[in-house]
Image (cartoon, rainbow, N blue to C red; front, side, top):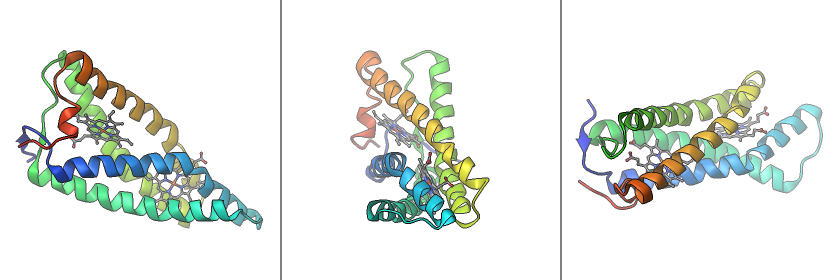
Length: 165
Ligand code: HEM
Ligand code: HEM
């Protein structure tokens, strides 16, 4: 059972922001991996920048998967706080649902990425769908965090910045 806490631990906060930064890097520079894969199929040359970013995509993606597994284990062992009580009930359901969707995407995206790398299509096409889904989810998530902190003033963003019990 996942325990309920008042706040997130220092390691949970660190993992949240490290994983967020790695995912943003993957979203900004992922197209270099597409360029490398397409060039390999066509026997074409790629620029050294695309080569380096393609290789970074591979290793950063695998590291993200490892960090997400550690983060989920930590969540099961030490728990996570309940969503803030400040808004209407549907907001707590939306918070739980979107966090669950994030974890599902954070696990499936690198796994499908590995299938895309070693097998090719249709996994490549499926993997590429992660981008619009992540962009929508991250935008809604960030706006919701700011809305909680600065409109409802319930300290939601603060608890992802400083550790609680
Ligand atoms: C959280 C982790 C990851 C994210 C957010 C991510 C994101 C992306 C994005 C945005 C693209 C470009 C899609 C496009 O061109 O529109 C891409 C392409 C690609 N990624 Fe990832 N990726 C991740 C992990 C991985 C991993 C671990 C691997 C394999 C080791 C991988 C392999 C690939 C491959 C092979 C492509 C080219 C797909 C194709 O067009 O055939 N990715 N990724
Ligand atoms: C790639 C980007 C991001 C990803 C993948 C991500 C993912 C997540 C996940 C999975 C949780 C749930 C944590 C748990 O209870 O186990 C969470 C919580 C949270 N995130 Fe993010 N996040 C991202 C970006 C951001 C940004 C940009 C902000 C701020 C503007 C933010 C603010 C928060 C806050 C305040 C919480 C705590 C919510 C609560 O306690 O109910 N996140 N995030």
